[in-house]
Each structure stands twice: as structure tokens, then as C-alpha cells.
Length: 273
Image (cartoon, rainbow, N blue to C red; front, side, top):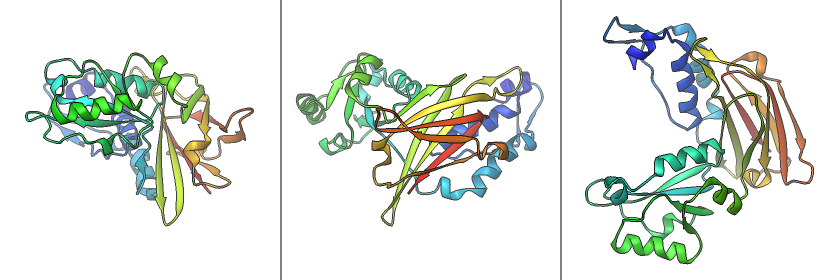
């Protein structure tokens, strides 16, 4: 929204949006110039340069990585059309609790033409149905069969989800909101994982993120399946962050505790064997 950016004199906000976009595995092309209601928007290239230089200089951290999806949320097209689906809200709650979630879609003739199959449910530990189940016919039978097998359930709360799965990622400590998103690549018999850490504590008044002095994250062993004797390396657009990480084996838990100091806008933890 160019009017919003102009009104609040924001230049670093689009760079912050770009970091989040790449953390989700997408790409964002920002506009250098845009029409606005009152005065035209012209971006500040210096504000964007660190993020885009970081992406362009580190293709090995992005290319070939797929999202890690531990659970899924059902998008029931019929329920969406009549306002009986809360899939967006449920996905937001998953994100806030660092549960990597995917989508499975039960289509219809108006919104999505695809047909849900049983094979689409199998990759996930659990598939949650938000709101009412409206879909009919063979797709409803697929969902109900998944419920009978214990893989599909109606969503009630995050407390329910956390009681049924073992989270792959936990943010143990932070000074503000942190987005933690894992992605995985398996290529030539080699497995790599990247964990995107995006500082979501953005100050509109300062037009920048507030640096977080200490972020501690737990990484479960199951996320690192296929990686023997993992090594952890931190990468960030801010050069001063490169060595600001320590890793130790968790006490009485199957995984590692990673501590990142001075998280600025965005950092990527690369884990390989």
C-alpha cells in the first residue's frame, strides 16, 4: 500500500516483508516507484540492498529447499464459501506456535476444482478440520475415513495440537516476536535443513526491527533426520551476526538448543552433516 508507506515514511518495512517472503519460500519483487493518492512512492534502495544482496549472494541457502510440514489444515471449499471455515485463523495460530503446517484442499465446482484424495493426508502427522465440515460426496468419505483412522480431527485449540504432536521447533526465549520456519533439502543422498529466524518486532516509529539480544530455539532430532553429526552455521544480511550463535545438546531432550545473539531483521541457521 503505497499510501500507507508514504503516510508513515516507511522504507525498511518492505525489506522486512521481503525477508518474511523468502522465509516462506517465495520471492518478492518490490516496486522502486509506485502511484499513490497523495504524492508518488519512491523506495529507498539502500534500505533494500542488504536483504537482496544477501539472497543473491547465498543461493545455496534457498534453492532446492522445500517447506517442512508437520501437520496440515483442511481447506474445505464449500465451507469457505458459506463462511464456515476458519482455516486462515488456525494457520495463523500454528505459525505463532512455530508448528510448520501445510494445506490440503477439498475442492468444489466453484472455488477449487481439485478433488481431495487419501494420499494427500498421508504425509502429515495430523490433519485438522477448522470449523464445520461441509464437503460432500467422495471427498467427505476421504475425510471421514481419515477421522476413523485417527489422522484427521476437528480443530479445537492449540492446546489440543500441542498435546498430540511433538513440535519440531520451539522458541524457548526471545525478547520479542520471532518467526521460526524450517525448510529441508534432500539432494544426492545429502540432507540439509535451514531454519529461518525472522524478527517480527517491527517498530513503525523507528521504521525498523528492534534488535533482540538473545533468542533461544530448541531443534528436535526428528527435524534433522538424515543428518549425522550436524553442524550449525548462522548466516544473516548483517555481517556482525555471522558468529553470534552457540549450540549445545539439550539436557534430557532429543535435540539441540541454539542460542542466537543480536538477532536483527533476519537470520538463517544452516544445518548440515
